[in-house]
Image (cartoon, rainbow, N blue to C red; front, side, top):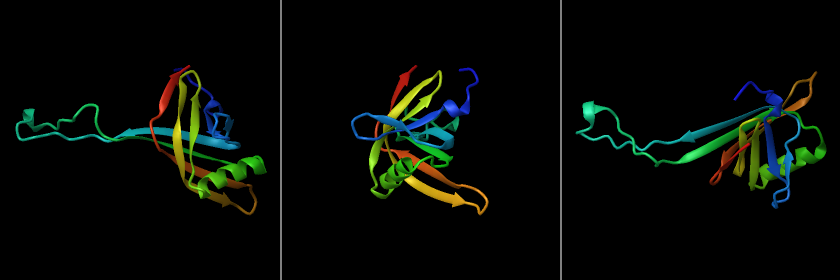
Length: 137
């Protein structure tokens, strides 16, 4: 993957529960992180007393985060109501020239900040709530 514009990394949410994805407006930064817990199976006869891990096990999860400004009242309300309702919705992360990650996520953090001489900004964090599907571009 060659260098890409950060603004081309898109975060989208299923707006109607039927697969109509809309871009979360006003994001200035976004991050996607994958994690996998390991299962330690080290025992007294492990070679050289080196840790051994059991392949294909452990819990996988993903975390999405973003920060920006709301561009319109509709996108502000949609994200806010999704958080306060505790909804688990399908989200997409489009990574240019790489692929799309799609699956269920829940907003776990929603923060608003503002300075007296600037705009109101927000930060949100999402945690995966099921299997994610990666589609290659």
